Length: 596
Image (cartoon, rainbow, N blue to C red; front, top):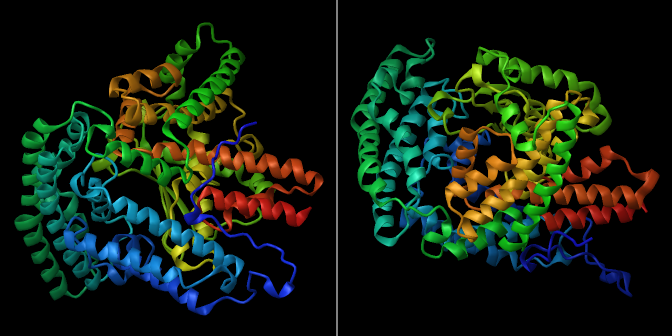
């Protein structure tokens, strides 16, 4: 069987310790190199300073008053100097000066720097600063809801937020300038995406201050604060909203609705902008952590789609549906029996019930479980229409829980057929286990506790969807079909993402392909296709990572026989946190050898 993954670039391959004729020449130290550990701390600290929003999400509140202008030339130069400087310092540490764990950190650090520097070599981040789903303005909106990572308990918390809003306002004004520059240089969003962004800014531009999303924390100031502090916070918040933020939102809304929409691209793929093909090649490498090409991924996707379709046929026959598979998709999409709820809380309760059903079986697959608490919440209304289900990590110290957000625009139309697989992916044992165990692992340097490589993180989450039967789920054929549907969804991504960005597919062709091969609603599929248009390559990571983890599990089980322990395999995959797939494969190979 042909391996899915080609050799990866030397910048992140671990140098494996080799036996030599002389034992004195062993290349792995047994005691940590403290100078190297200090470099890792320097790197972590530098990244937090460069992105204080990430620090806030990690529970590090030292930078809660900061919002750098990520779009400025000064910021770009500072970031480039930082990552370049770290790369130079890495050259001082040969592998024979490092422990095996430090060698892993060195390889990950080199990869991280290379990817960041390559990303900055393109103009995309600066000239395409806003889209409907991925950009930082939406993250700030989450923080502004008062229920996110930004704390609102003390006067200092509120003063920090007011200062951060000043920085955000500068970013908003610069975003408009950059998009105007983008129009001149050919870096513009497709029209269909601009049409999704406009309503988001319309609400922010036209809502009265008292009802405004960004006024939410100021309507809920704790009563135990000093009266003078409350008065000062209320006065300053009104001034910031009325004289800065809302005017900036109005300016952007007008710009997006007219000048920007008129300049919007009719093409759907990233290859329509300057250096688009080169950018997509980088995005593939960045998100999959492999050197696979767009053509290879496209062909792999077509094969996976065909395989999963055959499994779906079996479920269709099991439930006795008469008609072809496409008709079955329509039946599942519109089956009122699969839309049993009328209130959002009923949907939240159902997810919590799924968790309770699987708890007894978790012990059989996992002997290491996170301490960080976990909750399910409805996605905030301001972003619900264009959002998909997602997981937000808890804080590093475990005081803020991990959150599984699920959008529920209309509870009466919510279809439950994929809820079990969705919970496994976004919650337990998917993202919550993977991220929380990483954050709680005291053996990892701090910078690796917050790293995110999509092929590993999303690959793990998709892998866990296949654990449903082992966890006592998927007893209902429709829920099993839901799992197949979610796996199909990720297989389709391999086809449509590469189709959109490397093969000239239109948005409409990608939508039609999805409609013909999965049971998602048309509205959901349109949202997904536009998601791929906004962030090229990200959608490839799920299936690529899942297939690699499944391949490694099968390999370990075959080679270890009776010595294979699924709990230990999961420990091996999870304990090092997010790493490029080649490093994971190398680690599992070493583990297999050690047991043989």
